[in-house]
Amino acid sequence: MCRASRAFSVRCMETVIETHALTKKFGDRAAVNEVNLTVPAGVAFGFLGPNGAGKTTMIRTLLGLTQPTSGDVALLGLPQPAKRAEALARVGAIVEEPKFHAHLTGRENLKVVAAARDRAAEGRIAESLERVGLAHRADDRVKTYSLGMRQRLGIARCLLADPALLILDEPMNGLDPAGILDMRRLIRSFVDEGRTVFLSSHLLDEVEKTCDQVAIVDQGVVVVQGAVGEIAAQGDPTLLIEIDDPAAARTVLGGESRVTHVEEEGALILRLTLGDGLVPAEINRALVNAGIAVSRLEPARATLEETFLSITSRLGANE
Amino acid sequence: MRLISAEVLKLVRRRGLMTWSLLLTVGSVLIAEIIVVTLHAVNPAHHGPAGGATNLEHYVFLASGLGNVAAILIGATAGTQDVSSGVFRDLVVTGRKRSTLFRVRAPGALIVFLPMLAVSLGLAIAGSFVFAGNLPNPSATTILDFIEYSVAITVIDVIIAVGLAAFASSRVVVGVMIAWNAIVGPLLLQISALGSARKAIDVAAAQHFTPPNVDTSKIAMSTVTALLVLVIWAAVFTNVGRWWTVRRDA
Image (tube, rainbow over all chains, first blue to last red; front, top):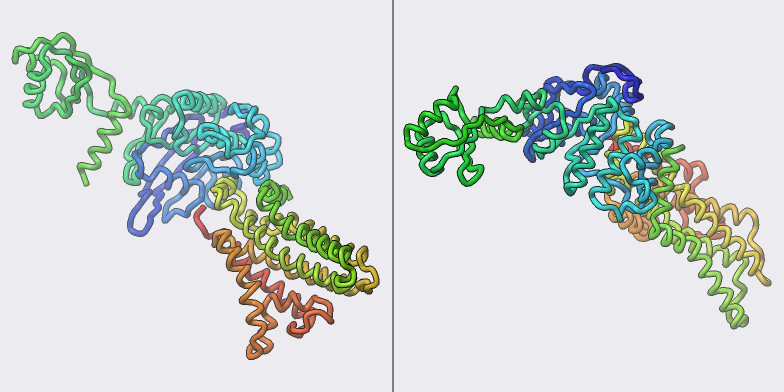
């Protein structure tokens, strides 16, 4: 994981974020509950969860914006808050939506934050604006910027640190499809440079397309974490079937308790979620025995979304 | 120093704040001088010359009275703008100490405010000589006393406003401080039953620096006491503001 790029010149590290039993309570409610999180260096890491799951609180706690109730945090291998300044000097972060002094220009806003960073930061302003495609609007007041431009200016502000780690809270929020595509490319380019991007999102599709690794969080608890593909594979198997009589097929499948979910995919196509060791051949046999013609039977790859829904619905059922 | 420059940048780019502050400081003295000069030119029998020691007193009280409002506006803005714009958290995640982020606000505000005060006092002093006519010119001691008074009464308010603004909105800070300076403070100074306790009021300490023949109602105290009172007021509000800035969630 050690590269020659400046992003990793400070230290060669295996993990950029490590938490141990990290907890943040508001009164009796735990927004972050005993979280053990390990984010490896050099990846795009998705922190995925529904709204209110505790993602932003987790980010705020990681960055020292709010004090944890208990537990330990290390950023870039440096214990927090003991080595806070040293760690944050190489971290760029956007928490919630990026905010700016609206009466200042984009360039002036970057100057304000560069003044709080090391002397080299001011020299990176032009380069950062160029990188996010805002050089031509750099001298316009931020109050004239669209949300997408503000998101990009937020990224430019992160780049002032020449960050080894970027922490982005819902970076796709409010972006149009072209903006989302640009943001995804930007994030991947950071990873290609050897930087680590930790992004929180409730947009499953985006996390799946952008990230290498993911942690799913719900109700303040990290339910699962690992490579996106591995986690997606953890969901129950699904099966696409094409039949001549979907209504009759639904009746037959309704009698099989191991079919946990049936969803219409097209006029004659159903998507089934199989549980408890049920195999496609058994489904085929049941349908044929009921006189239903099966013209297609195709195991489908589980998406992160299905895994996510499966995990979070299980949690809800266990409450 | 770079952080202080950033504070200055944030303030001077606020057109409304700058316009009003310039109007309250430089503009007020300039307008007053133009009016008095015009009146004297139109009817010299009824209106004396626009300069001299007496008119200097009027100009200085105008500059420091309205300049005080400008000082409060600038101090309150400097103290609240990072939090109200939402940028404070972005400054905190740079790893800079919150106490450092707080500590640069007052110097930044003073760098913006003091030149305005200097120009307005310069206009007042220049006018008192240029338009003196047959009136006596102010002495160097009188001029120095007026400068000391103007600086004391305004600088202390910039510092207090920055401290207060750490835990209140700028509107609240401006309202409370104008009320204190214009109503509550002077009222307390009139209550003789308070005796020497009135020396602890910042307004009384600032008034100590006016020339001896001006404002005979001021509370008697030594220069050391007056300076001590102002320093204590500045220290209290600075430390409370810093404490809250360090403690609050960003």
